[in-house]
Length: 359
Image (cartoon, rainbow, N blue to C red; front, side, top):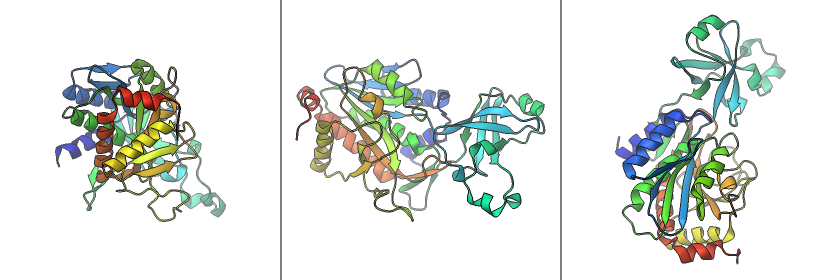
């Protein structure tokens, strides 16, 4: 396994539930400090590495948290009830392995429900409510579960090891949403140190995106960027049953440029600048219009007097579940596009972008 794959493995296998990002935040901090002597943190846990000391302030930020759960109740028989942290669909949850992060260590469990053998035909047709599911950690009583160190409020994360598929460009893991963005921002920070650019670049990640874009508020106020890029994943449309209208992006098709979501319409001048740069350097790209959901750019663009912002994503299959899949080509092409953008974002270019939208 090469160094980049090893980095992907570390990022995806490290736990980072919303509000409990300590482990992945420490990993990001370690990786950033290997690349730069200057890091900045906000008070929620968002962190960036800085390169450059003059010119426009360019922020590239992923979010480090992943969809997870929280223990809300321990039954008298030792089962755990849970609250989703982020968006979950009941169909993808049952019989999946999870890890409860307690003060006394991590405990493996499995998500269970009433056995399907006792459900009526009509009941089987419905999506099971998460409130009717539980986590089984093998405890025989509430007291035994508590003796393991499990408490109400403990986070619960999915289990899925990182794996390179038989087609080595295809990579499977948990938490590609959004460790893909974390990987991209680290690689951009590494590569821009070999380039000349007339700006100050901040590369890193926010916290608590999956529960309301919260860390994007604090990080954007900390950095006060002139231009911001939210690095995330988008829903791939290249699986059976997906219509072109529902999604036309595919793994291996290049960076996914966000043209619309429920939290932001990108600044037109910035959008055109990104497209023109991709075309100039023959970087294939895809477009994303997402009627529901949002990204950290939804908060970045509202910071202070307004920040021209753009979402640059990687297409991913099966997000918001225990496992997802991305293309290594897309990761590499996204890094390449962002490096080329940074090289061109001097003061004159940024001032033009920040002017009135023009066509």
